[in-house]
Image (cartoon, rainbow, N blue to C red; front, side, top):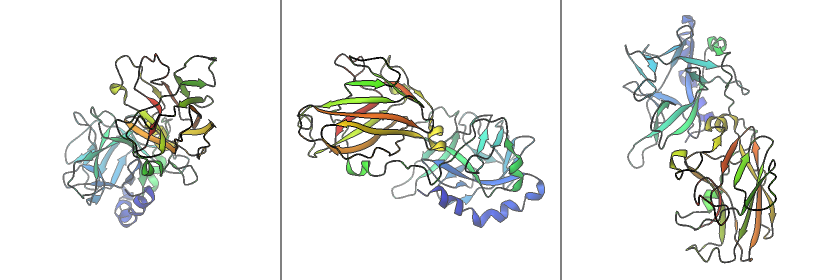
Length: 363
């Protein structure tokens, strides 16, 4: 997948086409996605806007008065029912009200719509083996988002008129990551394969900074600005022998099912949102606070979690020490917020599986 920087470079060759329309007094631009998918927005031969592939790069102009967008062929662009797909058709009209955010901290403008924060969904298009993965683009109104990932759309090669198009009433201005900020873990998933049937060890207790709990098994996790949570684990000596693993490694894995997949009665979590993670490069730091097995651990690494994903936070030697004690102090980075009920805490836990952090054996 190309980086955003590569996507921006690809716009150079076609900027002349966009800028030739400046005399219309419109804000004209091209688009590049920011998030788990970083691609230039292309337009296929039927007017669908896509990410990835070999179609021509899309060029667009915003009419600030009507809040409508047209492509380079002057076809109207919209996201309307029932599919809410981002597309541009001749003669067709939609009700989507587009706008451009005020410049973010990195100086970029982002496309927004219907007075929202500019949240789009990139949904994979089925392709043959060996073909580059491509994505259709949808609004947040799309009903079935299975397999889709959240992205923002940054303006590239924009004309000067876009500077006066920034929506001063939109307080959800996008802030894209900069090169000086931490990057998500790149190595854990490469060194630890986790079987779906692997035994999972839940924390024995959680302790939040604002909690008065001194004993028993607390299961409430609060990871928000100013309040952190400590996860305490006790690894039995026979933990690895109870699995089919031939590895001596264990991993700390964070699971975040979508709320509709949680067991009946399980409360949904409070989450600051995927776009907040993508655009602010926010997340969590897992600081290894105590360990009587002396594991090697990176305490300053940024970790991001997303609904529907199982994320490997880190890998360490399990060891053979009886009842090994480990604890992680988990804190918010750049306004990240997550509050939830950790599954599996205590012998009489109401929910054995759900959202939270587990120690699991590697394959």
